[in-house]
Picture 1 (tube, helix red, strand yellow):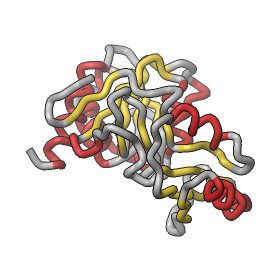
Picture 2: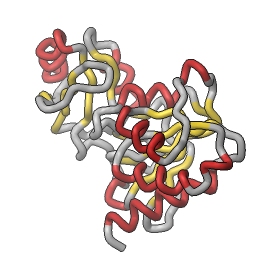
Picture 3: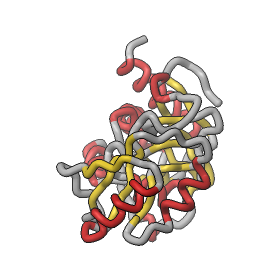
Picture 4: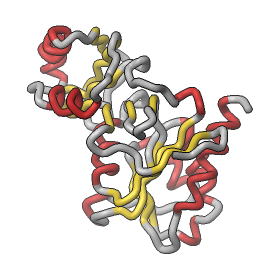
Length: 214
């Protein structure tokens, strides 16, 4: 099964977790697009969606699905999103699409987080995929120096401004054996908005496009 077929399979598999009358948290990315397409087929069963990006909001509205602000909803029953990497403990690297802060907020506000990935995203140890770090623009060079002192090799994603108006550093050269500790420590660097590690709030369920789930 090729990667696109796996993405479609994972996205469609998440539909089984959607409850009638719910407000669904929806993430961002190529796998999530397949989930949105599948969600549109059962849109009569849900009340609305909360989206982690303007891109996903546009797709949802194009399918006739109402998009609400998280502040108007409160706690969500479910959040469905992809990942750039996933380890056996369901801890994730996210942010390749630039929406990591909003994704982290929605994940924190959801009772269940279902992660949908193709098999290539499953790794034993996180860090092969560069770790995205969202930063306040004026703090970019300061945060980069702090990350270098901690053993990372940050690269400014020059073609990206987040939906929050911030910039992203992609950190290479990491082998993240203790994701929760790194997440906590780097989040304390002044000027960091958030780190694209989902370790303190990992996925509850991971659906892999090859049929596995854990």
